Length: 80
Image (cartoon, rainbow, N blue to C red; front, top):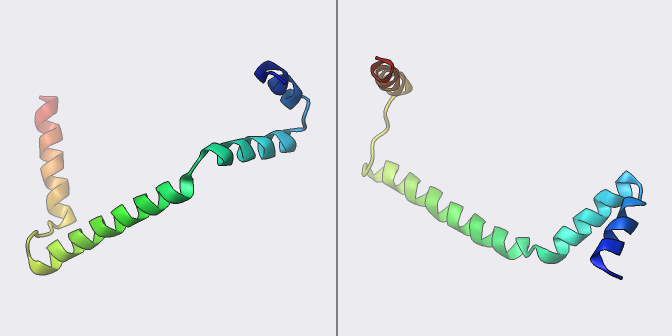
């Protein structure tokens, strides 16, 4: 069966069947579990690093009110 024939046959399916078929086809080419594990590990390491930076004093937080004031001033200056 050619790709064109498969597409045409797919159009004859109900919407629910097309959704299921699309999901199955995507799952067959997506190695998401391996990629997701890598992404999760990277985010865990990044978050841990940022928390460590805060706890050790390597970085300091800025209160929202100060951040907002700075941003507002930059926006106002850019508009002039």
